[in-house]
Image: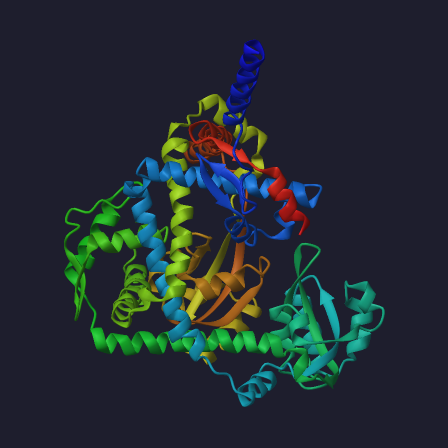
Length: 555
């Protein structure tokens, strides 16, 4: 009896001990995982999942996709925990970018409220623009294309003397497809179906009228065309209403912005300090390299009714706009930056502070999301990116293996004539079309003094487009030899000729070497980041409850 009782006691103790080693209960269905013992809920997963587009989800089955999403959410939570544990919020990198995000988002909300939402476009305006721009009709036209301007002008003179257009097209046009039909292009074309220079040349004409010679690229070389309008058909407003609304919206946005700047200028009375401006220009012109080194960054560059702004603050804004020392050597460009970019942004921020826009719930929610993104970026910068190195041999190999990454965007070289009136610009364009030298016309007429010592030649690049926005956008669609404009700019009316376009592989110089080093380090950092995130799963243990996730997927 004693032996049996002892055996039973041992069995009971063993059972109790075994029960103590087993979890007392399964995790609740609302928990999909734990991170360092803390639950990750279904609600958190759903909120994360809703932000991931379907096309970005990976996995052959719905469950596999959800499991990958859950792993990504866990990685994010691990990184945020590590960022908090290591005090990333104190990093200057994080603080600077968080400040910039707050400023930019406030400015965006302000512009939406004070500019975009106050744009009203009436039906009468749409109708007027529809007719003014020639979108109320489509044209059928004949064309004669020849290789030289001299031949085009000779044919133009013959037409004025009564020659038959169709016969001349049959005899002279190098575009044989239309030439064999007497120049007939065979279809009606709307204004937006044509390149800007052709549309501009023909859409103000009546039926049976002929254009002067128009430069048209053909087989990669400039050719010269005469167009004759032979018929027209009405086009409904609906065919171009979307384009018209976009054009009017852009036009009214510019007008509303100008009005707002002018109105706030009368409130805050900003004044540029000419002495500080002169010092800035002198130091930038005398400097070397891309960085601006100021002797007295505390000097005031402008004042307003609320206070003053220093040279140092202005340079910080220029850096944020990716404008280096070379972009601050011309007085007109610096004044433009101050008057049209820096000061307007400054007085907008003063208005924002008074309005309490920074307390808007939508703004605060978006800022909180951005804070998380920047915390992750700052953590990566501190723990991974800054520890990555590259050798000269690795950089050179990358340059040789990836030539496309070292072929810059093209530089479009124009010769510009900037004048005060649209009518004079139109006259000068006609003279350019008649083969007058653009350099001579620029020296005689252009009011852009800073380009006179280059006879009006301006290289347009992605780096200086901020100063030539309207011209840059138009020039990108033109071939070498084509004429652009007149286009209205902030300083007048511009007409120009595209004289060159340059694009070639950059030599393996100091700049290319610097970029090659950067590419190698980026690739290494990407791989290092993956390893770093994996290591955090050792620091903060993770347990995933796949059964709970599977049940969620099946719902």
